[in-house]
Length: 407
Image 1 (cartoon, one colour):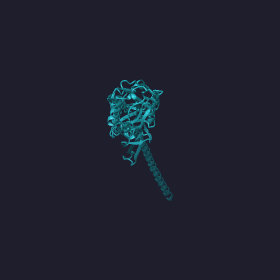
Image 2 (tube, helix red, strand yellow):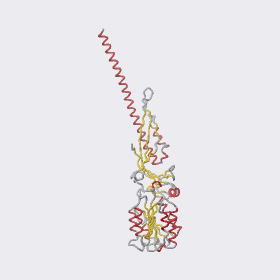
Image 3 (cartoon, rainbow, N blue to C red):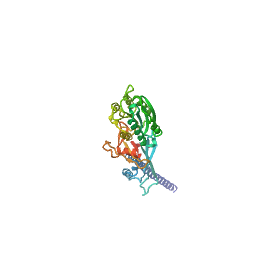
Image 4 (tube, one colour):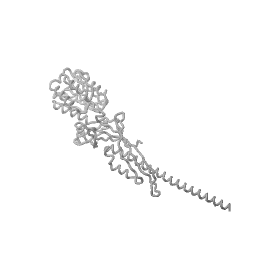
């Protein structure tokens, strides 16, 4: 009897142990299944977070920051994964200013959800939260960065500039300063040599310029020295756009070279040279050869004749408008495979407006639009867009890059 009872107890213990192992095995299987499912759902959530972060950056770069949260394509990304109860918070832009003044705009997406096990019709109380970040570069041409183009007026005060010519010149310069355009002005006055220079500044030296141009004219005409002085004034400052407007009534009569070689030197330093012949009897041959942007000497589009005070005023504004209708250079320069997108932002902030691309600025002059000229690394604006910048103080925002995951 005792032996039989012992064997029964032993078999009972073995059954219990076996049952415990079965329970443990089942629990391990359940846990393994849950962990595997958790990993799958975490991967699904991470894929959603990655896609949403990159998508948000792409929408902001192409369509504007205001378009992100209500973009239908991004909403479809959230609804695409039916296996998880995912909640995606609309990402907000995070700005980081770089040493060169540009910004990196980062979008971070957060995906939250509860893991579904499928056991007993209930969910395990395991919450998932994943994040991802994507970024692109942005440059703002606005007052905060003081990226005004630098514009040196080189004025002929030789003896031949007397009478109506000098009065028209003074009136035009005063009118230009009175317009309070977003330009940093400098001044070089010359006759036989340089007689006055005023360094490039936005507004602190404008009164000095007004006072300087009141002096009387006299002496010979030397183009070389004033061009050297203008180049020096510009290149000692940061290049936010270098421009010279050289104004005279004719040929130089002093100096070994007529200033053409100095204009070539200016273009080699990334300076655009405008020339203006004042007076109906002006000989513009030399001034035409001096004119042009970097890489294009003698470009007649940068040479202007002006006969009287009204013509001179109109020409001044036309020249400065053409400068303000070009923003750049973009720093850092976009890579060859990167698209550049431009937006118009009203003075004081507020909702930005996407600018359409145009391949013909003259044809689309009456429309909002822009054109990125990669060879110049600058953005050119249509006349209507330019008016918004000049007359209303709007800002141009440029975005570029290839959004990719950074986290």
